[in-house]
Image 1 (cartoon, rainbow, N blue to C red):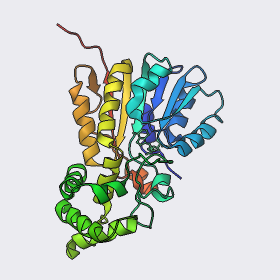
Image 2 (cartoon, rainbow, N blue to C red; image 1 turned 180 degrees about the vertical axis):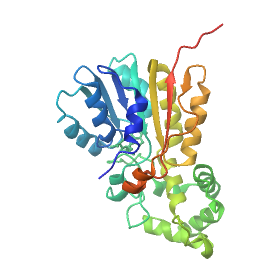
Image 3 (cartoon, protein in one colour; image 1 turned 30 degrees about the vertical axis):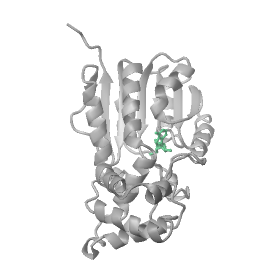
Amino acid sequence: MHIPVLLKETIEGLNLKEGGTYVDATVNRGGHSKEIAKKIGKSGTLICIDLDQSALDEAKTNLEKIKNHPTFYFVNSNFRHLTSILKSLNIKEVDGIIADLGLSSQELDISGRGFSFKGEEPLLMTFLDKPDEDTLTAKDIVNTWSEENIANILYGFADEKYSRRIAHAIIKRRSLNEIKTTKDLVSCIEKAFPSSYKFGKVHFATKTFQALRMAVNDELNSIKDLILSANNYLKIGGRICLITFHSTEDRIVKQELRKYEDSFKIIKKKAIIPSDEEIKENPRSRSAQLRIAEKYESIKI
Ligand SMILES: C[S@@+](CC[C@H](N)C(=O)[O-])C[C@H]1O[C@@H](n2cnc3c(N)ncnc32)[C@H](O)[C@@H]1O
């Protein structure tokens, strides 16, 4: 089960209005959308987006059970295409947007797409539940990219301090045979890590897996595109709520919101984080940070 993170804070942050039009850019199975749908009611509109079609199908089943639910649109797409999604639905402006970034518990634990370093799964790491031949995968990256490019994404996307050693171990291993599974990859990373660092609080493969997933899904550029669309489509007074799970993601969110400071007012300087109680109930929420911005009318002199 995926438990929605910072639910109360996000719902408050969106400042929901009955009858309003909202976008859940990462609906998954509808954890946040369920509360949004109840609050905006029958006269509202909720656009639910996810790259994972199976999650979207479940969201549809769950959300359509709500009494007096709003008009729903379920869109299997990347949220980076929000502008074209809204154009195709003939929606000119929205009252709020939420994106709860990253992956769901189901994607991590049971999707079999290689997000977890715990088992042995094919190295896909894509949010698409049915990738085709042209979909970039983590297997493509580790078996075909240059040592320098691999090291750069490990360092740039996840601050992995052993990026060069890990990239080198990957190149060495692939010269013998293809790296096919998460287990193959974990064994390369393990070889590159000094033994004293292997038993820290955070698993030694965490950052490499995070960086590869971010590269496969072009996550940082997708966030930039989403914020650009939000700037164009939010009504004055409309809000965007963005939940991130690591510092690289949060840095991009802050940087992009600041880029549009002529039209976005940051609601709280400091990010909102989960309470001790929430972390106890849902340990996966521990690294979550919520940032909220409101569209305002810029006066040009
Ligand atoms: C953390 S989950 C969202 C959980 C949801 N808020 C809830 O509480 O039920 C993130 C979801 O975003 C989807 N996702 C990630 N990146 C995406 C993107 N660029 N475009 C569309 N969906 C994306 C994933 O497939 C996943 O289902």
